[in-house]
Image (tube, rainbow, N blue to C red):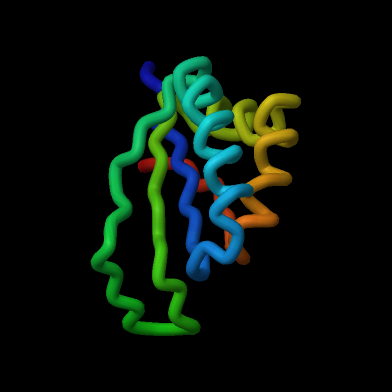
Length: 98
């Protein structure tokens, strides 16, 4: 039986440190390839219809919830995450698909 997919749902404010964001983006390429991550949603148009507005929302898909967790807690991502946290304020959730 196939495991449900896993997703990262990231809601963020505007980027405040473009240099840190560039470093995060560079690190993310290798991490995404290693864990088979792919962006499935995220763009310029986001409508917040309830709750505080976060102008950027990204959804990243993984082959399973466990892989999504493993990627987040990996040593490589933990190092890259430091750049993301410098670049923007964000809310980050890991969700199991149905």
